[in-house]
Length: 162
Picture 1: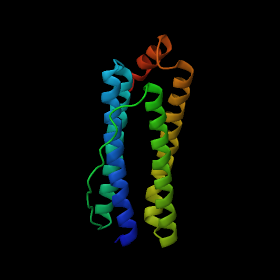
Picture 2 (picture 1 turned 90 degrees about the horizontal axis):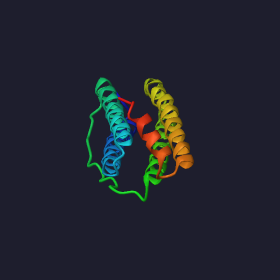
Picture 3 (picture 1 turned 180 degrees about the horizontal axis):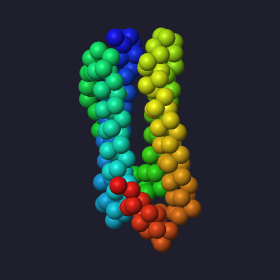
Picture 4 (picture 1 turned 90 degrees about the vertical axis):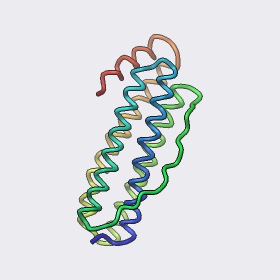
């Protein structure tokens, strides 16, 4: 059985992962509206990944006999100043999720919940990947800018992600 405080924080993390999916779907729609289908496809794939993260926590909680309680998902932004600003928001969001996971791990350690600590290691490694991916894309956008051939080349590259 999971500690009540850990279960509450895992429920919050499920909400955060579902919000992330919603946030990235909103970004996908934004990029689609700009005629950047590669960016849109990439963000759609990112949204699917976040749904998987939420389900991983959902299943873990069920396996540990904890009750999953789904809360309202906040409405994400629908517009950004530019593609570069959207990608910066993506990076910032991933950094915030990393901080949430780190706090969860700290709590699991404080409570002596070794199973949850081990479970969270997957998320720690995943966040390293997520932040690296977002930072790489932010760097590419910084060099490419928000218009022109370089932006279209990045769009084509991002379209490869399934």
